[in-house]
Image (cartoon, one colour):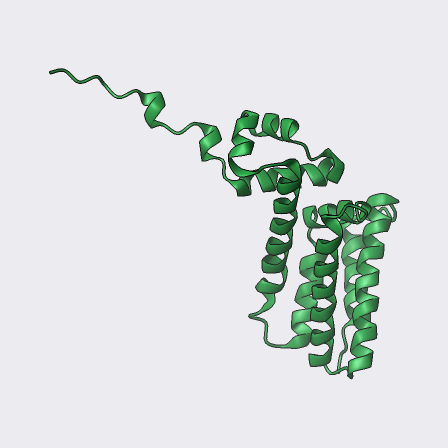
Length: 200
């Protein structure tokens, strides 16, 4: 009895089967950063990933399901990469400084957030932005309380901090102002830190 040699193509997974749902979600986030929420569609993402649309339907029943997964991925990664990375900093003022420096030197997360703010009328976007904004404000309030501010002052300072963040994004990404050199931005960031973080 003879046996046939195994077909290498049959034993090697194709690229489409190796792509995970997270791969598709990340590709959707990349597209949001480049072109906005409305650009998320199956065909351009399949071309970008070098696969057929069939790969997509292994993981998601619809474009809306992919968008939801992308938003959830952004939310969870944002939570882990920002807040999770600061848990080891015991001093609340140093933790706030580390937060400001970390956020100040990010690029892509800001672009995604800015694009999501433009799409607040989308039913999938609004709840995610609400949760993320609420979590960020609560974190800031708790941090300013730990840094010595009374509750109402901590709430005011948190709102001022978040308003400065969102406003700067609007200025730089949508109005394309101010145009800063690296040194100018670093000086601005240091000014923000010294203005908003309590010293005693």
